[in-house]
Image (cartoon, rainbow, N blue to C red; front, side):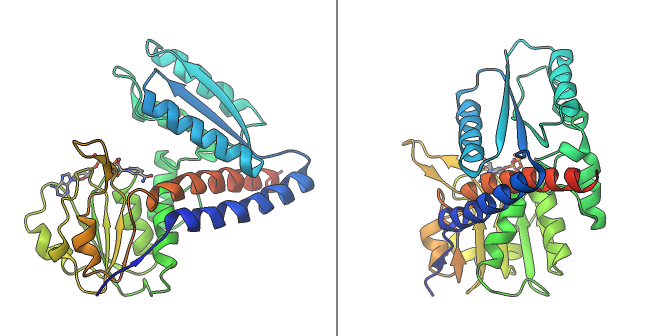
Length: 286
Ligand code: NAD
């Protein structure tokens, strides 16, 4: 079998197009655009690029972005003060605190400081709890985008065995919750899993979110499986690759996402969607 490629770039483009229409409707109905507050602490070049891309994406669909920069020497109190300002700012419906924060700052404390109603990244413990109990709230962008990619195959998630590799709070755990919410049978693997190849081989759906170049081998993949590669890794020669050995896995999978051009573009599209949905919830609660 040779896998069909799940074109995340094209699917994300469709999502952004639909969002642009919804943002326009929102803005006409309520007299203001949705707004995303973006906080960048420190001078990590990769984070600066991510932030710029997110702001550009906002602009293209008509979402306002409000940017605040802080130096790498910023104290916890200074970061908290900016978060508090954005929590109180009615123009801001979603807040994005770009991670990782410089060493010495408590990431979990800062994420928990963001008001749960403005938690566009869905990392606040209250939103993680809502996801766990199946209540409406913000859902983390990457796993949310992965669900759209899986659904794009037209295959049923219900009853399928989904194997999630990775248990981080931002990808693996919420991914498992989302798949469970769609009635998949879910197995979560991690660094201590003993027989990873055998477990992965049971997956009708495999989501790899580890951060190790091409560690998931092609012969682990069940024939016809849906393979979603969340990993973004740089090879020694500078080129990008995922967590899955793409060429070999594509020989066995039914569907597979490329890296780049798979999950990455969806993450930004979902951030825009979360911001709009936050703005709608706020407007409707008035
Ligand atoms: P993380 O480091 O927080 O978590 C990695 C997980 O992998 C851990 O739960 C760990 O237990 C597991 N793991 C480590 N070694 C393993 C092994 N040998 N076998 C099985 N599991 C193992 O990483 P993260 O933040 O979840 O990100 C994972 C990857 O996804 C990274 O490459 C990251 O860059 C990428 N990512 C991509 C996007 C995107 O938009 N495409 C978004 C977030 C993360």
